[in-house]
Image 1 (cartoon, rainbow, N blue to C red):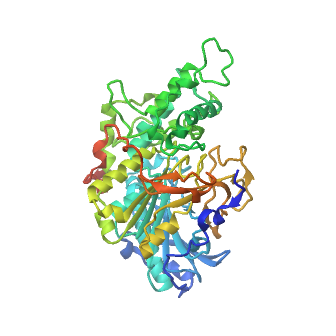
Image 2: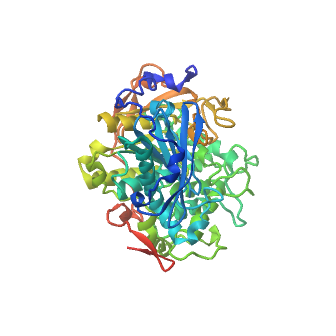
Amino acid sequence: MLALVAFCVAAENVASDAGSGLSDLAAVPAIQSCSSLLNASLSSTVGAKTQILSAKTEDSRHGPVCVVAGSIGPGHIGFEVHLPSNTWTQRYLQTGCGGLCGMVQINVDHAEGCTPVEDGEMATASTDMGHNGKSMGDGSFGDDPQARIDFAYRGVHLTALAAKALIQRFYGQPAKFSYFSGCSDGGREALMEAQRYPDDFDGIAAGAPAMNFQIQNSFYHAWQARSNMDAQGHAILTADKLPILHAAALAECDAKDGLKDGQIDDPRRCQFDPGVTECKVGVTDTSHCLTHAQVETARKLYAGAHDAQGHRFVIGSVQVGSELQWKGVFVPDASTDPIPSADMAMSSVRNLAFEKNPPAGMQVTDFKFDVATFDRLKPLHGLYDATNPDIRQFVGHGGKLILWHGWADPHISPINTIAYYNAVEAQIGSASTQSVRLFLFPGMGHCSGGDGPSQFDVLTPLMRWVESRQVPEKMVAGRPSVMPSGPPGAPPKPSQDGRGDMKGHMPPMAMMGKSGLDPRQALPVNRTRPVFPYPEEARYTGKGSVDDARNFVSASPTTAEPQIPAWEGASFYQPGFQKDCSVIHAALVCK
């Protein structure tokens, strides 16, 4: 096995040359005190009543940072902006919020080795997207139509306007470059910006985007939960059986890409039947195999939501090789434990997905997988979803978009992102080749983790692309051999199997707390791999370690791209569906 090395000095000096290709921008100090921002009048610039609630200087490891908190009406969009007093190099970064948001937290993830982030040179901001939640899965705000609009698209956009106005006032000049980075719902927010507000950002990184919000938070998670429930509502498939299923998937599919290396590079190119794991007739000890009921459950999970007439209600489901990531999503530890996917679905279904909310006591077992239910979700497709492929205005002013997704994502199928990339390419033609890139990471879970290389820097390639037109031809990702433990900055502990994060733990990210940037250092890795822009693949040269990215080159697929099966929402990836909404007489009105 490759000796443990820090990712920042991994193959090809990934982090050591991170600053090359970026504009050489001088640091601009603040021209006024932080407390003076309390008097900033932003309402006319933002286009809505905006209040500054606090502005105070706090210490960070790179010096003082002005932390500004505010609120935007007519609802309650909370936002926070962090302004370095002496180290700002004229860049602005806004980060997305995951789940259903409901809290302000500036998370800068997948930026290991990104110099402007690590050196505290960027002004940053984020928003709670218009409501305060008990958790990031709390959808109770849906009773307020203004909160729905603010969550769907308004909160992120107005926060960008407010933050830019504060930057202008604090430094006496605007940001030279503006960026947005988010994953999961943050990825949806990223795409919403490119589609609805193409002038807000110069570069956007959209990870595992929940762009099909309506379907993702209803049919997808409801099906995954129901597929794993018996008549008493108990889980059929439990986490102890996932390694068995995963081992069988690897045995069948690992070598399909020409290299048996413990990861599946493109799961679509392998047909895997979980029936190979079924216990033989007469076996009484089922600890090393799956029961017939568990096999049937696995088949349903791979297949995704559909009805007996052949109608498909999701564009894609979980991919072969993702099995270890199912734990804690729709596969619990014990059969009597709750199934989180049920709560994920019902929080949205009860509060957000329909024009008129269903009864508050509705359970996942009440959800119907039929065309009539799908059609009832369509009216708010134009409010929440970010699947519009017409981003000509964004690319027209030089905007750059990096899409990225993990093949082993249990929350959002990567097929969604592939479909969107293809739709953009079909819609804007040759402009897409110079403005949009998609990177798919084998073995990576939802936004991070998994048993494949999942630690990488997406921001530096995006910034190089925007600032010096260096097209990102590859990303080098590392597979952590240790996993983070404890509070930010705490030393990591070894993973149980020495191969990386097999239990779904989140890898490190830089978190902007009240004291400024609190980076979690890049973890040691035991494998690095290049990931090339889709549809190009990484191919082993036949020489050297398979754990070293330098021994792989870009290659075109040897077979035709698998076709996405027809599904009920195929029209969702066409332009012209998005709606502008407002509140009239306490009701949501969209047109």
